[in-house]
Length: 238
Ligand code: PML
Image (cartoon, rainbow, N blue to C red; front, side):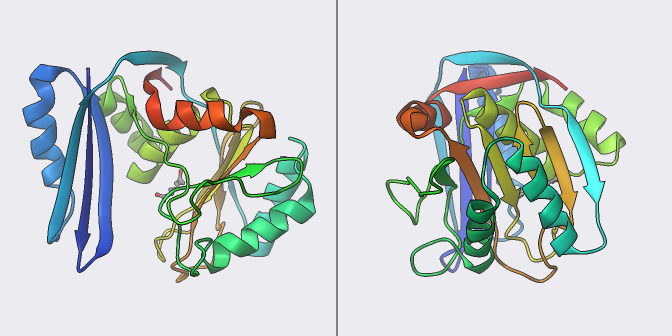
């Protein structure tokens, strides 16, 4: 199988990125599809790589919780994540960082923070780049997308659920995510026992800041990063 990754930008700013895993004979069709995704770009890169693929039987189960205000939504997320053994003080500090841009110069990171769940210390080797969950796709993307859209979820759920499922499979104990898209305020938390919990609104409308936080056991950091960035997975079903 092959992993195909596309990243596009306009005037030096990231526009869109996507990934597919497919058979050699389907590369042409996948590339054509990925090229139609960015509306406008002046730079696009495609990386095609042969990968050994493992399977994940089932995606994390989905639940959605809707709140009046961001503050209530965040309190709910903190309560849930405390059950996973992460202190509220650590969560509040990291939420502030995501809200104001977690990269050293204040912008969004390109990837995720990776955090020691006990001390709250950030462990990313490069705080601008962060950690990237790549090499993951649905075994039947079209079938899964149709099912999720029919249930009222969005195209973002399709990709975020795949990423969260791989993260937890690789040993991330819990994940927090909200988008950097100023108009997309639904985020999620995920863990083995919580599943994929969509939370709305997880951030204020209009905010250009967002990203992902991966909580890990300190001693497992290197193994988890290798799994997230190097091992390829196809998820078989919902
Ligand atoms: C959802 O609607 O299921 C939450 C998706 C979060 C997407 C984050 C992103 O696209 O950056």
